[in-house]
Amino acid sequence: MIIIGERLNSSRRAVLEALCDRNAEYVLKEARTQEQAGADYIDVNAAAVLGKEVETLTWVIPLLQRELKVPLAIDTPNLDAMEAGLRLHKGPALLNSLTGETARLQRFAPLIREHKPRVIVLCLDDEGVPTTSDKEVAIARRMVDLLAKEGVASDDIFIDPLVRPAGVDHRAVSLFLESLEKIKHDLPHIKTVAGISNVSFGLPQRRLLNRALLVLAMGRGLDAAIVDPLDKDILAERAAGRALLGHDPSFRDFLAFARRIRPPA
Image (cartoon, rainbow, N blue to C red; front, side, top):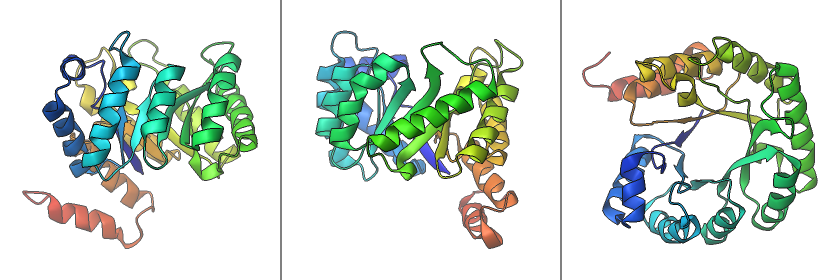
């Protein structure tokens, strides 16, 4: 289970202020604590720094890479910002995210060919947000084929079946889990990813809902999750879920995790 740390996102007021003020101390603290908590990637989103997203990424990406051992997920729909980020990033970044929208794919394809990032693909196309799992699977298949033609290895493709807010539609989680299971069945060589915290938007006890969804999704084949790695309970759920699903033979990783818990569980 690959963990993508979600906290360095300009939709959070404190992060937006830190990016606008070039507060390196705050930005590095947010990134380091996520890395230390076990994040495999640090997601970086500066989209809310209106008019200065490119400039902000040009500052923050070298800053983070000097201090971190893990790579970055560059999170932006802005072509110029993504190009600036990929040019600055040392080693393969994670492009977050591509969609099946024709115009966007045409714009992003040259960047993907040149910089060879790993790629998150949202199950979304020119017709909008799918309302059936079969439609999501169809988008996933088409995008995997197109990315393969651009030279992206199957191991570098992450399909995101779209987690929608459960408070808006009570069928949201069922649709997500159904889509996830079908995608893993039809495209077993491709990774899956989800922005877990989207499910709890607007609801109380958000972390409780996020943890529950993570375990449910792991049972349907989720490979990577965009979460808050500072939520120790969600990492505990991940460790327990992997063990019970047979992804952790002999419970070795779970036992190592349990020994780190104080007091012992």
